[in-house]
Image (tube, rainbow, N blue to C red; front, side):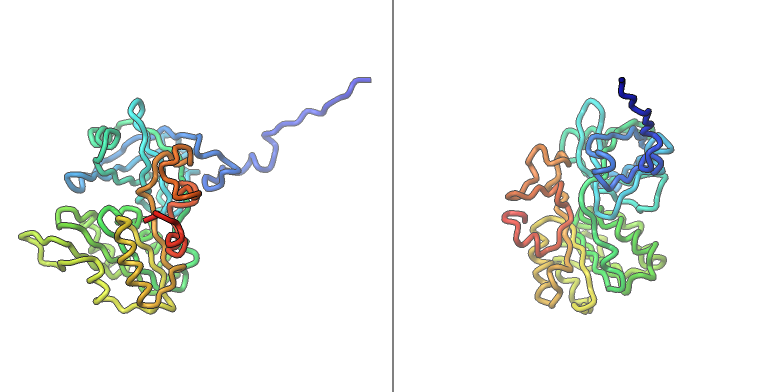
Length: 302
């Protein structure tokens, strides 16, 4: 007597009828999947940074691609290599992904030579995100130094689209000199339309600079902080975390309500190269977003 095995069509499984969730590795191995994409525009920001607007070519993949503020993607230039780049656009934008690239090496140097219409690849999204849902009903401090304003653009867009969920929102941004300030063309829009308080400062003033001069911690003199009703997100050079988060801690803000991004440690995005590990922690898998209490307990994290 032969055993008859009934035919089973996996395409009829309930899970197959749902669009893939790009934030769950159990559903989709996004570390292995790449998306053919096109550079639809390039905006020069400074002599070292350019903003790339990149569109996933396949309409279905483009519609299903989702990410959360603070996550990053691997940007690949075929035949050259790939680099981790923080996503710097709105989570609701389905037309393109904004990636700000600083020219610092071979791959980023080649990316800076691209023209509109170039084909690239992206993988991701990767990493943890800023817990915007935990911040509902609180004041939010968004503090950036230098290139740190790039990953903060996603939370800024998020708060604009969910403005009624949050109380006062303050952006504090510091740069070394006026020529290194990024996205200054958006600052007035953020103030008037997004309802944010925008404060900027530079360490070295130029001839045409009439704004504040000094370290970013000087901006705290212009902000009233209620430590019981405030969350903070801090992005920038790791050395900045000690001073900014230390100042916030002295004001009474709990370290569990301060979030920092260690995106500068990113390399492969998959925990394979071990370049981002701090002790037994892989910042590309367990981060890049951590609360500051966790970072304080990660030896050599900053």
